[in-house]
Each structure stands twice: as structure tokens, then as C-alpha cells.
Length: 72
Image (tube, rainbow, N blue to C red; front, side, top):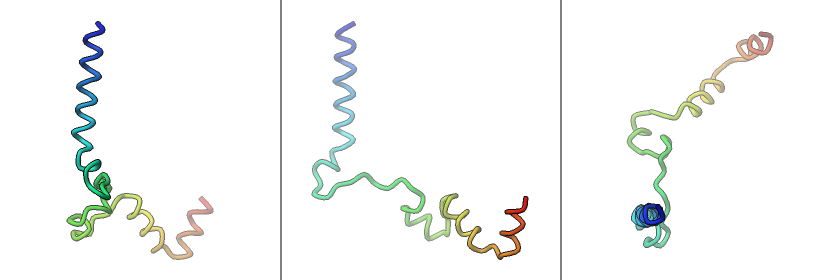
């Protein structure tokens, strides 16, 4: 039982170290952005995250549409 736990912890530590090699060894290393807005190819295609698209839609509404939403 104890050997299984020690082996598991050792494997996890090795995995974490291997995943963070670039971050630890690079001078200003950081994790790459996994956000849609951080991906240049998606930005070039005009694809944004849902929150950003929602904010843009809200900005485009006129006063009448905003007042109707408040009354409901």
C-alpha cells in the first residue's frame, strides 16, 4: 500500500516537472494563453469568446431596446 502511494506521488512529481520545464528554464516563461482571445488564428477569422461577443451585442442595442428589457 505504501509503495503504491510513493510510486504514484513520484510519477505525479515527474509529470509536473516535465510539464513546467519551459516555464522554469525560460527567463520570462509563462503558461500559454488558452483563452480564445489569445489565439491569433481565431482572431484573424473574427472568432471571439462568448462573453466578448455578448458585450459587443449589448453595446449595439439602442435606447428603445434597452428600455424594453428593463420593463420585462
